[in-house]
Image (cartoon, rainbow, N blue to C red; front, side, top):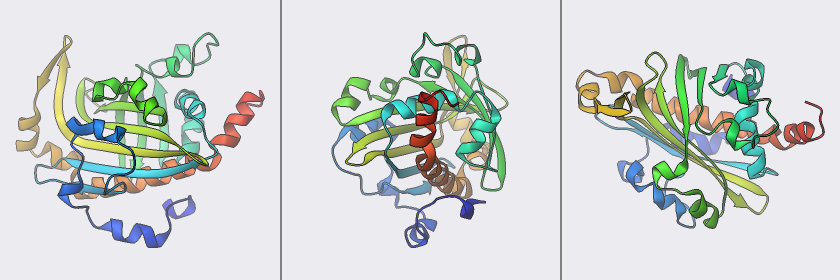
Length: 258
């Protein structure tokens, strides 16, 4: 259903069917480079590595949007499946927040309704149906304190650990979504690290199983070339689509129409 939603022009997408060079990967330990002005050599691309891990980078435009709209969206869409489906019709199936009891409270900020929560989502990545637990964390966990992000021109940040859909304390990846101010609104710079740093959390302690996950082929099944490419297409589609209606939807919310 991708061709029925807003997406990059065909001429831009075609070269990205090939993996980006390894040299273009931003290591998660160097996330602070996103505070630098300008752009990286590869803002749009994907790559899998021999150990099965994958990296995805994506840049999308959000004309007319603000940071407050983004912070609102990240709790509002989790109230019911129909709202989550707006984001990517057909491919987004369900989302459930562990902060369900906070979603209708008027004494909390937008951020307090999702930061620290876990969203259990079911969606299609390409032809593969997946359920994953998205645990939202402070960007400072990745070396990106909000004060420094703001000083670098960012208006919103949504960062998360990806956890397995069956074993909720098994971490299987990370992502960063950073919205930077532009002349006409915002631009979103996203980075995904899939299948790296795998570990269990037991009694608050991290138990690393990264080597074992690679040796058993778990990383290849979870990421690899196909998932990396499809994840890139999914990100471009869902966020370009979100950008197309977010300002209008937020205006309706503010006017009491939702």
